[in-house]
Length: 496
Ligand code: URP
Ligand code: ZN
Ligand code: ZN
Ligand code: ZN
Image 1 (cartoon, protein in one colour):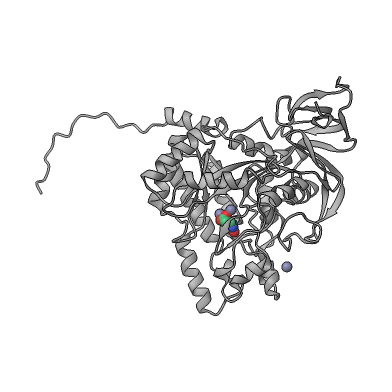
Image 2 (tube, protein in one colour):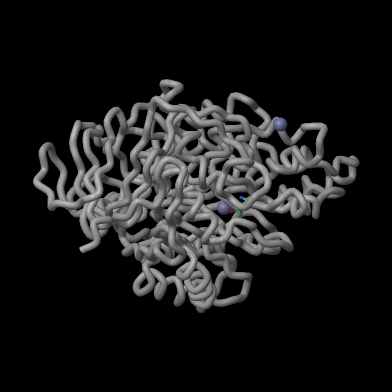
């Protein structure tokens, strides 16, 4: 056996979502083989000195769009560059979205995504599938995807009118079907009709720049759709996952729903936790356009801190990035009309640092909660825990050695992503990825990458995740509506 497939991480502090302890970690053949002090290991193993470092599960980015064809162009981070950058930042798994055009086959789109991603990915990955139209074929294909292809999450758009958007009745059907096949319903929660009207209004007022993008879809537009999704999901007892929660108002809806006992999860993203929408008012058009995404980054500067507080408190559950990157020249498709600026920002490389800086270094959360929101909760919700998201014997050896005492400055001039800017430019982050191990191999060490295209594997996710569905099933059994038993009515009935 190659010594490089046997690794001993020595002298670090292991951090899981529930506890931290000083321990060595021994890796063999892609799995964590043993954890403890003074482990007996074969000669010739690769030793990583983790003194004064944390040894954590590699990050899981719940939300990416590598090389997505969108708004007339294509995202520049492909599955190779995007996963390479992820590994450089300490993320060892991404979850990307298959997005079929309206009226087209979900299964064919899924196959296309697989054949694009499989030969390129440098780390493990999984796929959510978007439901962009409704019909018998979609129903059948959702069932097949869940039962045979390892897809247990489907994203429904409440925005992008005439492109991806579903109406309420379709949402009702899609959520019902998610429950039948044991999947989690995900929503892009914004009111697409209001956005379309708001955009017309802004353009008529002569507001054509990036600031118009937020002004045509203010917080209430996101909060209303979030509440509607919560209501529809509750009506059919389907678990709900709100992707990219971007505003305080929408986060409050998720938080209140959880307090009302709903099975709802909220996903803020690195952009929303690390920066804000004030940049869209910048005098330099190119600078402003870089920050355009949907739902928008909010101009209220207290938003990132608020979202982080909710993430720390378990009102929000996991973090993604919505990494969907377009160069400035692509953003410039909308130089005269903000509705044509391709929506999307970076994050896949910097999420782990941004959340450490704004979450842990700021004192809002501890190292264990950090692990929960950067990996473990995602693995639980999407049903691949403890295969990933935990440092435990038998788990996949996707491991991050983290130096909480060093700092780095985020910059497009040093990042590994393809995009020609970085929305976190100049941010000094405490907490630096020192070594990233993916599938039991060191793929990043102190600035040096050693990745292989196609080395990552697709991770299938079985339906009916216990973490999500146990409560749903229980309710199904005990909370069925029942009729009142009464004598038949004997009185008069008017004739019509
Ligand atoms: O601006 C965004 N979010 N672009 C990607 C598509 C989506 O809605 O997630
Ligand atoms: Zn979305
Ligand atoms: Zn700015
Ligand atoms: Zn997205």
